[in-house]
Amino acid sequence: MTDTLQVIETRYLPSHLWHPVRLICKHSCHVDGHALGFLPLSAYDHRHERGDLIAIYRNDDLVGYAMIGINSSRECRILQIWVRPDARQITHGRALIHYIAQKKAQPTRCWLLRLYCADDLPANIFWRALGFTYRGWRWGRKLKRKHLLWTIDLREPAALTLGLRMTPSQDPLAPPNRPPTLLPDSEADQREPRMHLPTALR
Ligand SMILES: CC(C)(COP(=O)(O)OP(=O)(O)OC[C@H]1O[C@@H](n2cnc3c(N)ncnc32)[C@H](O)[C@@H]1OP(=O)(O)O)[C@@H](O)C(=O)NCCC(=O)NCCS
Image (cartoon, rainbow, N blue to C red; front, side, top):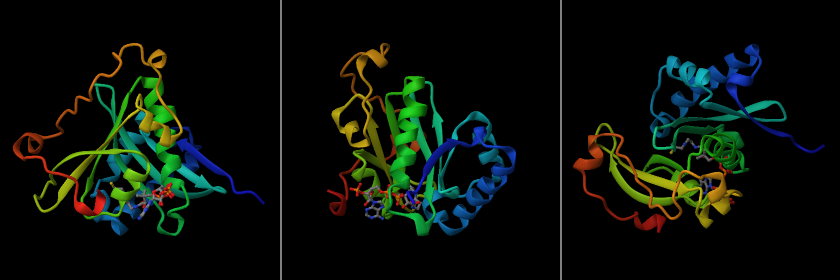
């Protein structure tokens, strides 16, 4: 039997399937809090209602989720992504990002996906494998870890790694070859100097 993979915005789920998603979001912060941070359930509820929470199912089994936020500069921030440990490295993470790029970013004319990832996480290899580019770093909230900024410009050939590319005709408001304008999320962006990608990631 062939496996089926389904990626869906949680707001489109029947209501009885929303509760398990909330549970897995909470669970993920317990088991991988060092990677995701800790968010109250109300934050997931908020993103759920806005259409910014995406779930992935393999054969009707909930195996992961991603949370995004789209800003006024038409940049799509990946706020959280998590795949169940027993379901990792078999393309679920890639499928979530592919869905975000194709179904969330492109229809809203977002041309950039961006996120921060603490420098000690294996997830940095994931972002690079997907074709994201390292842009610099800032201190995390507690000033203990460096958080690396990764972006992918959906108009660039590198986005082909994800299996899609935003053409100028799909993005009429964006002048071609416009360099990314990375807006700081916090003062830490301005306060701290940039440095190069850690050796292990070069
Ligand atoms: C990061 C995470 C979402 C990746 O999900 P996943 O389903 O395992 O990723 P995929 O199977 O789609 O992997 C896509 C590519 O990244 C690579 N990759 C993913 N995780 C990797 C790892 N830990 N080490 C090395 N490569 C990795 C895969 O080998 C694959 O490469 P390929 O396409 O060249 O074969 C998942 O590991 C996770 O939930 N981690 C804990 C939470 C976390 O760190 N979130 C991100 C915080 S920034």
